[in-house]
Image (cartoon, rainbow, N blue to C red):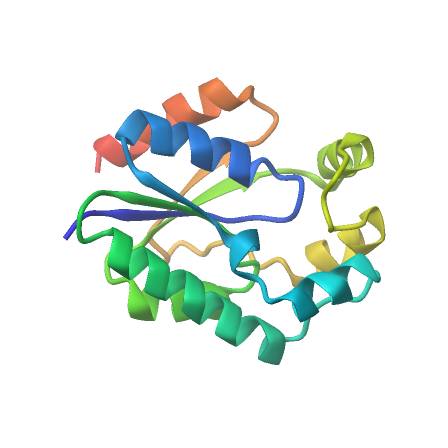
Length: 166
């Protein structure tokens, strides 16, 4: 069974950019968690309303199922907010050996990024709820943290170096 890496964090933390770089370097399947949201979830977020846990469980299950299928043939990189520990545990239940990658992005950096990007459903108005919900991976979670203030290529280098050193 191939490895699965979860790149988690708030909107604007760089998880998709980092995930795509890692997938390219590892010749892995890249799964963008946002693509697994049902239309109702996206509409709710576009309206500036945060999702509740009941809305997230089926979404997380769909991601885990897709990753479990994909890992049969090659490594998998998932970009998914997975802000709470319980969300990561839900993914981990369906993906044994899941390693979490956490681009540590301070609120000021995320606000700057979100304010300048176009075409994404997540409005800047949900930034506070993202940080209120965020539970940084604990020491007992299999994870690698990297500063999101670093350029994406450097972040990918640091993650791969730490992952390979395990």
